[in-house]
Image 1: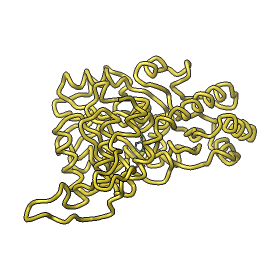
Image 2 (image 1 turned 180 degrees about the vertical axis):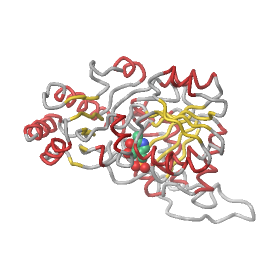
Image 3 (image 1 turned 90 degrees about the vertical axis):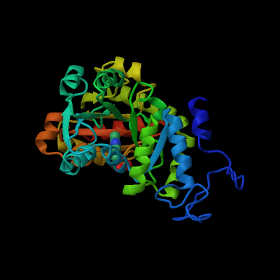
Image 4 (image 1 turned 120 degrees about the horizontal axis):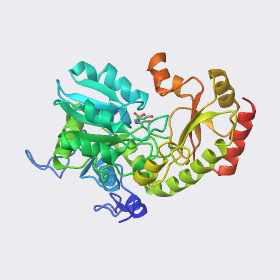
Amino acid sequence: MKYSTLAVHAGQYPDPLTGAVNVPVYLTSTFELTGIGTDRGWDYSRAGNPTRDRLEESLAALEGGFSGHAFASGMAAIYGLAAMLHAGDHLICSRNVYGGTERLFNQIVCHYGIEIEYVDTVNLEAVAAAIRPNTKLIHLETPTNPLMVLTDIHAVCEIAHARGVEVSVDNTFMSPVLQSPLALGADIVVHSTTKYLNGHSDGLGGAIIGSRPEHKQRFQMVQKAAGGILSPFECFLVLRGIRTLPLRMKQHEENGRAVAEFLAHQPKLSRLAYPGLASHPQHALALRQQRGFGSMMSFDLGSREAAGRFLGALKLFTCAESLGGVESLAAHSATTTHVSLSDAERESLGITQGLVRLSVGIEDKEDLIADLDQALAAV
Ligand SMILES: Cc1ncc(COP(=O)(O)O)c(C=O)c1O
């Protein structure tokens, strides 16, 4: 089946008990046991819930994985991923990933005796050189948040697999519609379902999609043992969002391209980063590994004051964190998504005080461009 069909039908078939066309929300913490040690497939909602099962089935189908696992947020999913590692293991992570991922690795996971090393994964030689005998996982984010830097997933997987190392990819920015990391060779995909998958900015969520039976065993254990699972109602919201994901992504894509082309001609900004523009240094890689370019982009207005004037003047774009919803958002990365980094770290990554990130929604593109135009006039 193709994407639009999978989005509507995978995991979303009529309820066998009642025929309900929509997936029922099983608001129950526990399930009647049929005898000592026997049940109808569910015993306690931390371990499994029928609504969550359906979402997990849908996510696995969309990513072409063996199993899906829904978590309470994107960060809970990445924490679940880190739970694969043991003391003494070495984790390689892309440079300039979402700030919350670095905060989790640097302030929590590192205390478990896991060595974390940030590598410029654009540079394949650097990836090969960083692998050690105790390296267990390479975690990629591509494109990165907010600088839209791409990593060649297939090439990194070839290097990693030759040395017995697994590769995970945070696919939040592309969604399963625009990029399939598992098909490119990755072992595990993670998502913040808070973003495009849900698509309506009305619930946090996260997911891990594994490619092999041992991943299923591992991540089911993490869900049951650590408990950071997604509630049945929020599973329902993500399932509902998924049904229109391919349609929404088409509109995000069309608007993203139009906005980027408009911004490319604006003299008041620099460092416009959108992989769909021929001027993006990795445009060829984007064409090869993605099925589109999405609607995330960033640019530099030169100073915090200019960024403040621009954000303050926007009328249709809302100045807010997060991304991937139907509504357009604009964010100041240095004080939001990457606030947990030091000034020096942000500076070395290029996350300047003048940097603004856009999540272009699905409104009419002419209205979005008019809003950006009038806000740029205020800078
Ligand atoms: C790429 C990426 N991964 C993970 C996360 C974390 O997701 P959540 O906010 O759902 O915990 C975010 C949040 O912005 C993100 O942008």
